[in-house]
Length: 299
Image 1 (cartoon, rainbow, N blue to C red):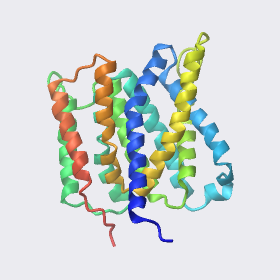
Image 2 (tube, rainbow, N blue to C red):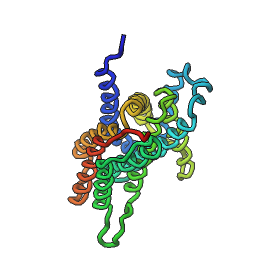
Image 3 (cartoon, rainbow, N blue to C red):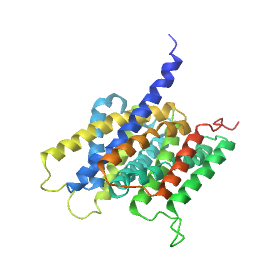
Image 4 (cartoon, one colour):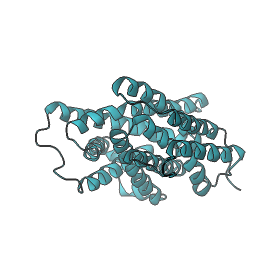
């Protein structure tokens, strides 16, 4: 039987949408853990380690060296490293910065995706592609410009984490799209390994131990629950970005912003400035335009 074309399209789109909704809410449990003296890097590493253990048990049949090293194994290594940086930076950004501001800066990812798609996927940059670059840059300038100093660089730790998370996510997204030799499961394992290693490595430079001595059973259960959710969401996201064009995937994931905006309104007292709203609107507009890009590769 031939696969149903509609089903082939809807499943990866639904997977991306589900993952985006989940990430629009997951920042709050990480903030709860931070308030319990569980550092964000430690929490990220621990939850992804739990996801890794689940993945090793569930996918043990695919973890033969022939499968891992088959094809272009450097792509799998890159997916793990860049996903590790992206996810850790995301967690640290939403913990220590303003949630919506960090997320909007993260969604500069279409700008980076345009550039990486040209280099790795040999996709020609069409007129909408140049428009994505222009509108994204206008949004970034609007959000980041400090009139007093005239600086365009991110002015806070949270801003830096948001920008770098989006940059690394775009790179991981494009590499995952390019890597059609490794399965979604292997790519998910690479993500879990990457976040675990980078998170624990970062934690070594933090004062104190990895987990506070007096951590409660409730917070341990929260870590465990987050690990299970990360396990499921990672598979959904990797399935989505593997089967959906890179620039279209980032647009579907914009639903994360709506979920995060509602959650931040009710769970925090953060208020965005008018300039941040204008810059954010430009960034979101650029993401929407990116879906209209001509993705045909060079001959």
